[in-house]
Length: 269
Image 1 (cartoon, rainbow, N blue to C red):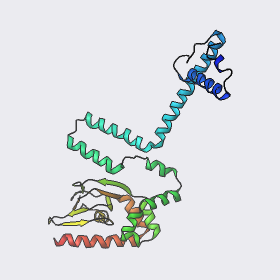
Image 2 (image 1 turned 30 degrees about the vertical axis):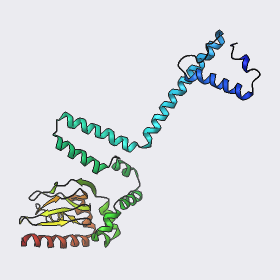
Image 3 (image 1 turned 90 degrees about the horizontal axis):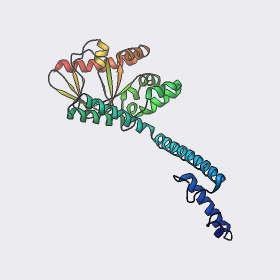
Image 4 (image 1 turned 90 degrees about the vertical axis):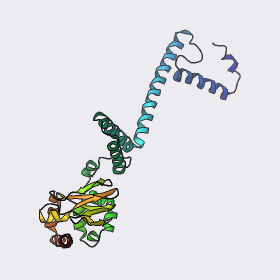
């Protein structure tokens, strides 16, 4: 026996237990055989066994700790991994600095540091749950928009489930005059300018919508629309627009009334 053990024979059980625990931990956690070299084959095999068990437990602890840390904010990690790919893409194509900055700002405003596979998540839910989530997410849009506030709840739900969230930066042309229109837009937050041939600007902000004229007339855009601020919009495709309004003809008349008023004002300029 080593010289340290006889000194503990008459000590309290607390000191004996502490020394035994220290020796076991020094075998299992330290690189090597711990504080004292093993004596005899039994000590050698027991020491090797404790080192193997200790190394295995240490590796498992590190693995579980890493997985736990990553799972605490997986959406932020997913965003960071995605944006690293974007940075590599911009570097590969040698994009100019101002374009890179605009792309960076777009990602910051569009995803706000977190990224989810929202379509997949909603696609796995039942229709009632999906509608409940969409109605909750778009509650501010519904509250600010008279068209939705006074409409049939079933119509509102049918519209909201078909909307696509989009972000535009200041100076972006959301709609260009003369192009074929395939979408209309609802403004959740931001300010846009409607630019007509007479160079007169009309401002629209939260709770407004635009782009419906082209969908109703099946013609080309009658005006351009430019984002003045960062704009958080919801877009509705022409196919979804017609699909919903076929079920709710009264709402088509409401859109047509606003569209005719806007066309009259454009014609006067």
